Length: 270
Ligand code: MF3
Ligand code: CO
Ligand code: CO
Image 1 (cartoon, rainbow, N blue to C red):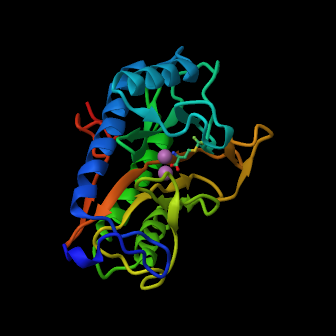
Image 2 (cartoon, protein in one colour):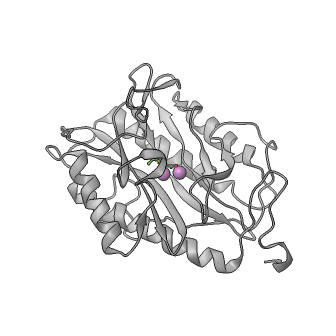
């Protein structure tokens, strides 16, 4: 990459990272993804979301890493676990999973100061057809967004690709939460919207690091946050799904830092 541009901040406040920084993100992303691979066997009817979170907290510690979420704005857990109509930021606890529940598990770790942030969907027991369709569309929507990540495209191109795909399947994109820049910080510019218009927004440049993390609802897009100040749910109680990757823009595309080492990103692997 053009070395003179490393460490620059764009006019939109987006940091341009160096080749060496990619190595840091690779390590952090790989750990977050490995932890999500390793907890898949724990997700089954009868398990509690608190048990899954405890296993994640232990795995982060055992790796010599730090949880980015414990202590973040008062949050006290190593993961967010969002079941069924919970859109995001579900708090792990005594809730028992039942047959057919779908859940997003979102983990962010800090390795040598670098943040790896990823989430994916799981199912307790057997997946029913409606939930399977939602999960498939949400996963594919993230991948459509990632396909747009290359220098010269804009953030609007990413949002448009996601929105067009989701709405073609008669589902809706959540507007109230977005992806974000990250690196040596958890949340940095830009806001990565999962809807938008082609050619709008900041230009993508080699060396930008950010997440794409679309939330898709079977019903309407509106959400509300519960009295615990974290848990976001669909207003119409419809089922919601989310997938998240951390990516870095390369000279001709992007690197996915949080790719699953075991090929378990999509819940219907077997
Ligand atoms: N990992 C979430 C994200 O994708 C943020 C969780 S913040 C928490 O940005 F405090 F709720 F854990
Ligand atoms: Co994120
Ligand atoms: Co996340």
